[in-house]
Image (tube, rainbow, N blue to C red; front, side):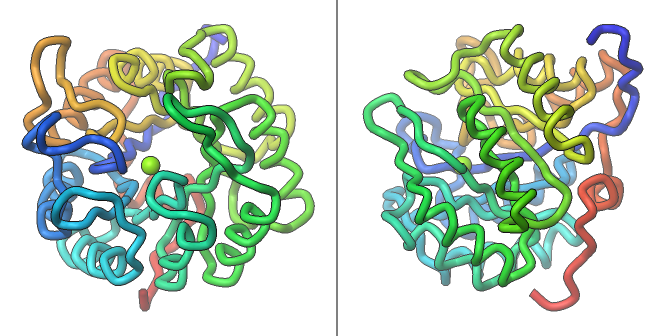
Length: 284
Ligand code: MG
């Protein structure tokens, strides 16, 4: 893999909030919709072109409220024109179909996990029935999926869904590594993931996210091997071992430094939309 000339633009996704970190963990994590819009704008100006969104109640508890998602979408569209907005359909923010009711506001992208695995303290359950329903909602509202692969089988399952036309758009596969009790951070597996995506879905793009202390190493591997990458306080609240991140933008700037070390330009939102084949939606 080291012989690749990977000087293509790198898309940086910022996962601003997630469902887990709290203000007690890091007071700089954006929780309210206004804080999220402000944090996204800083990250956008720092170089992120995709924002991965969860919403919270004002007390910090998890929410899947479609109105909050819509307000966040409207604010980001206004203050970060062109940025690709991705809603999470992840399993920590709601139960069953609650995880997809906000898809009706037609974001550019939504995350989709296509199989089950373990999380640190629970099973991350994604039944075939729920996956089929979330996929059909994404088709209905013209949403490009980002497949979150927590396991090798998820890459095979994604390929099957695209072949059966249950998902459409250019496949975009994210490898998630370093979640306790799921796939560890392992370079050989990482390279095999890339090889498998290329074999099963030659037109696909790929990116990767590392959790906690593994964020930076996964950023490095992704950038080195020609993929795209994710940062942000959903996955990691620290800028270094002993220092909390001051903002999502600070993590984006760190990722940008890695890009320049590997001579990868950072994709603008226009380049990111072209790479992922996601035109601007006129009316959201
Ligand atoms: Mg998420």
